Image (cartoon, rainbow, N blue to C red; front, side, top):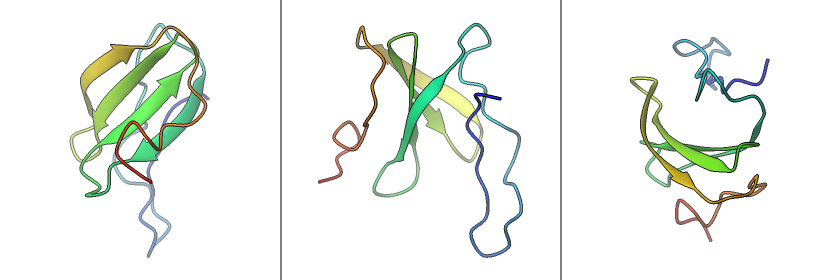
Length: 79
């Protein structure tokens, strides 16, 4: 359904509602957590990266990169 969904790894239960990063956007292409787990980056087919608070399920900001990113590890500081 092209949303971002989170699950509790210990119980397998969903956490919160699915994150529909943008009602007008279809196609979440990639997802990455920040090292502290306090932010999720979702790269979409519309060429934007959305930064989502996983606890509140709210978009905090977005970045227009002009293409559909397929790897977000460097965006959030993973090495």
